[in-house]
Length: 120
Length: 355
Image 1 (tube, each protein chain N blue to C red):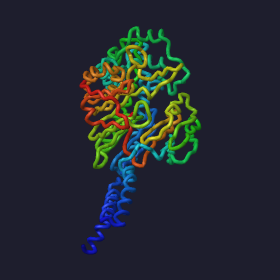
Image 2: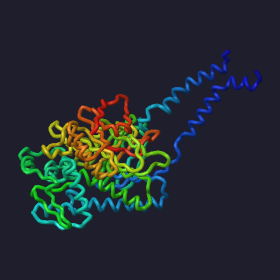
Image 3: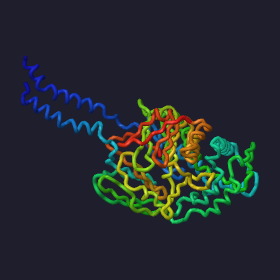
């Protein structure tokens, strides 16, 4: 015989399942944090859920980064090659882009950092 | 049914859920025990991860690695004034060059790797690399590719490392066009030296990652090191693998350095046979104990391409190779296949073949 308590417990379990599934088998690849590092050792850790622009100074001058809808990219840099801007949007844990001439790098991490090191 | 049993009957699933939640909480990772440091060295970012060392030991080790890498950079830089540029100058003038044993040993190793690769990893083509504009800190995007006639002139009598004669104390060149550029080997050599320094300081669990290419020793505590291999076409990871003991993972990719001119992309890995950026390959990943060998091998196999890589891998004695061709097909050796786990919703086409 199913009591009201049983129904409640079953309902609660069913509600919890998707949460647990996402937490343990879900897409860990989605990043939530950007770690920005400058040559002089300055480091900024920024959440990706808050849209903003920021300017980081390097040896060549000011590099501008943009965070928008959980993604981040280089939008302006005083380097000549502009490879950093070519990298485009970064959005997943482990994504990495750098402006080597201006010595600024971005690494993304998710809720769970799955990798000790990235090879490319 | 007594009261306790009834209570359990009613709350059993809930209790089970609570226990599960508690267990899950226990499985969260322990606090970070890796010392992570990012150095600016070798003209790139070098990440040094040290596991299970105290702050004092880490500081000493990082300083030693920085000193070692700076010295290598100053010795082997291909265009900033260095020991190598001085050697190149004298060789171009037709002079014999006296050099110390350590310098000669590095060149001898690069020479052997070059010959083993059938000259596809060819550090003798410095002039060709310079002609393409890749011997500069920042290549201007609007600079056009070189003229065919200029490439032809440098390939009339193509220089190889076999033209370099290494005696006990001296170097000579049999080809006036020979100019050495150790891109494709120097980074691997530097990573090997950095690991040597760490080991000499009693550190046996570490990763040195120089601009994406790494050598890992030991383990991360009770588990192997987890390595992600970047996707050659899009942000994120294409594959994951675990390393432990002592292994180097090196990738050569066409996305690392390039320029676009009039809608055509030219990347930095020059095929010494054609004088043009090698075609047909997006990236090559090689695992080998020695970082210098892995570095040279990744370059050579990239140039060899999807048709020629197996022969070169065989000659170089490589067993763990993954080549991604320009159609996004993954060519992989059985030994590599066993340990690489592909990521993403859609798996690429995978072709397993023995070298």
